[in-house]
Length: 183
Image (cartoon, rainbow, N blue to C red; front, side, top):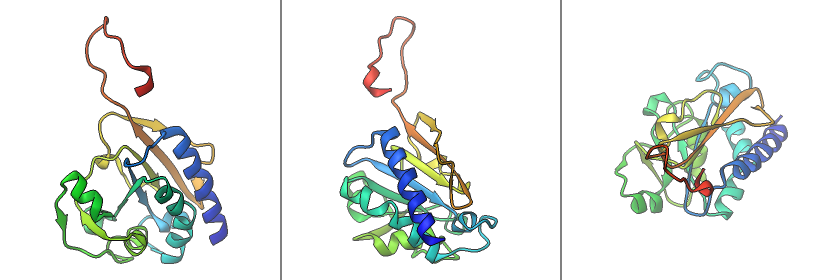
């Protein structure tokens, strides 16, 4: 089971990177219900083993490309985020005091906290793209304007996935010329 989760994650995150064109220094918010991955209802069976198998499929790829991860906590920590201290300083984001646990923050956030070099918890971020594994509602952490992504593999384990990238807002009127590279 865990090997399948890792393999699913590798495939999905490669497609995500291809579709979002994330660059070094950009932020990807990740919302994940390990309960949903194993086929249970969100918030009912948090699993560190499942989270670790998931992160084995993408963490090193993102880190090697210099893409920052913002791992969303569960509702018990008000959907706060685990990020590197360096990113909090770079974006001038206030750090809050909490340490995620499997049943208070979620197994995904707990795993991110254990894997990052210098993790901190923040309440808000404006990410460049996001992936939602199991209906965790990541939209509040994306920049305007979000563009939905559709994936060939629509599940990791039993959890449905959705994603989004962002693009600059269109401004102006009918005579405006837009930079196609930013779309």
